[in-house]
Image (cartoon, rainbow over all chains, first blue to last red):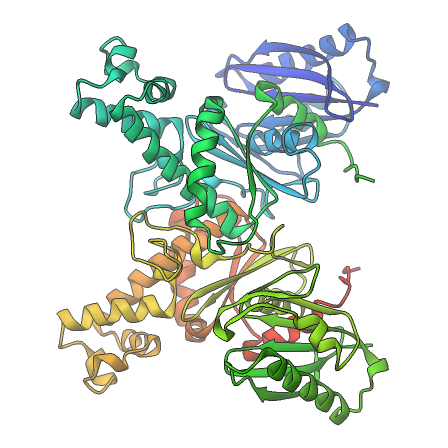
Length: 320
Length: 320
């Protein structure tokens, strides 16, 4: 038996046929075209799914279950999407609509949760007892895996690491609160700090790298200038690493998972970021001499959502 | 079969014979007299344990296991106490020493963890799917229960809610970091804020209630004055409730347990505190219309440690 994994994004819908080890056997994509009636979006999803199956030589009998990762939250009982801000969805019957195209069990979970789940099955945290995945992108998302299963909380609203309060009366957040983790640990935070630094220091290399246009600054430019030892970019980088370590330490102090996996756009900095984080994190530890969560960069990249979604329908496989 | 539960504190050692539902059948206590060689302390513990058993009419054959809650952390594999700051213990072979008195399986976990575990078995969170216990005392401790079992993390250093960073560059903490949750959510925080308020406002009722001596201020006096509508005490109370709600919201955003249980000295304020917390917490929620963790005051009081420790040796009982 194989599994359908669907990564529903604001721009595109990626669909794969995935085996029980997380290997993608065949895949396809269709544009989301957000703003349309949900029936049309789910219709294109259904047709693309059947097309991906057919092209890979799979029939309905081969499919054990369908899993969908969404940038929002779903009701496990009804299979309805409760919120999906990017798509403007509220209370959309995603499970029942999609079952019109293929009548199989449909599992739905948050996109960061399924990406972390994928890493725990066939990525960097494979075989771990417990892991927490942090997506460092425009915002900060989280995915918790405990004993081989994703943990989204009792009410399905957990693993929102980006909205943990980290600074009383700090930066205003899109959620209405102040000082949330994602105001300090996201790519958005790097850009904000980089811009502030550039305005104070017009001689920074960051100016050259964005062609003199502050509005073109992105996280990669800040990191690239830091790699070239631009003092101002280095200051931003070190400040960001410090903030990120505080966010990571929140996970260690609270849940103490076996592993913490960094994903999302910022994590593409690879060892430049990872080495700095690993060097700085020990100063925050409560028990200085005790082992603590291993910190790694995610491995599966853009396929993580599809793979993790597919694996939602798979019973946990216990290692021998 | 019954279970021995031991609550090892800095002042006293409480020992109970507990049945599988968490009911204390017989109990006793012996002073810790911290500072003595660990063999002497564990010796008194062993003798008191045998005495409590004998007085209750229990023999070694009746005892399934021994559990110990400690104000520190232990190595599950060796049964050694790794740290126990109050007692000055480092790497103490608690399990093997105690087994000299009664050769049964010995389980050791953190005192806040076992207290939260006790509440989840026969206290306010009994039967819940998942719960997080917060002890609001001199510091802030935490206990996580997931699927009927205590969760202390992969390395045994988790549920340290008190040391989650909550304010960048905030109040210095005993752990060496700044802005930890326990600097804002503990009884110590209430006293600090109360003293600051008293120094600015000598007309506060708090002065009368502590006989004009600022050094006698405690959390109960602040709350008592707030109950009497002293403006200054009310300001401290509301600020504390706001901080506590940020701490509680950290738990909701990250783990989303079914329940959050408030214990420790500050929780003795009961509904005065609970009502204020419940009223304020909704403003922080990310998903305003979704159900979220039920917040309650702990029920088991000083017996929680003994009961929870005893239950460490009990296999989880699945509800029918």
